[in-house]
Image 1 (spheres, rainbow, N blue to C red):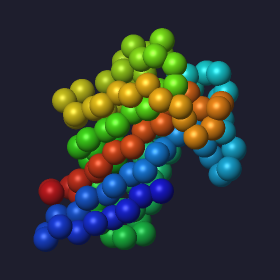
Image 2: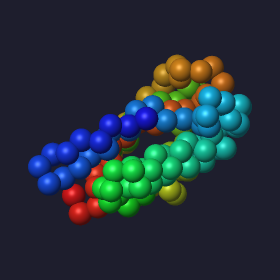
Image 3: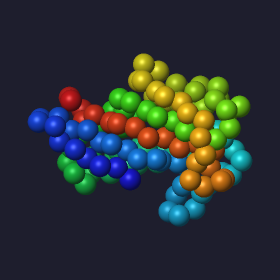
Image 4: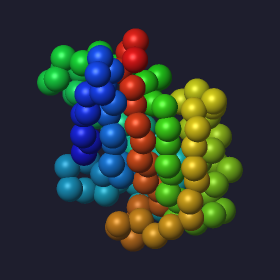
Length: 119
């Protein structure tokens, strides 16, 4: 889920909690690495669907400008950080928080803001 907001000539996509869920099913219980990859795939699909459905040009994960990452178990922090650094420009500001996630089988959730290409 996300909200597209126009600010003058620029567009921002405000992405709500995204996790390793497809349809209504949580995927990869207990496997933090696979959950990170599934969450990144879901972020890509969400951003790409905005391009398709709204006609606003985003550059996939390169459009991300701010991230908030909720992690259930702090022991997973280094692995999650490394995985996200491989997929998303490490200079993108991030806030990592240890928190309960909406479903007990989920190990992480990501919120973020994406800016339209050229914006």
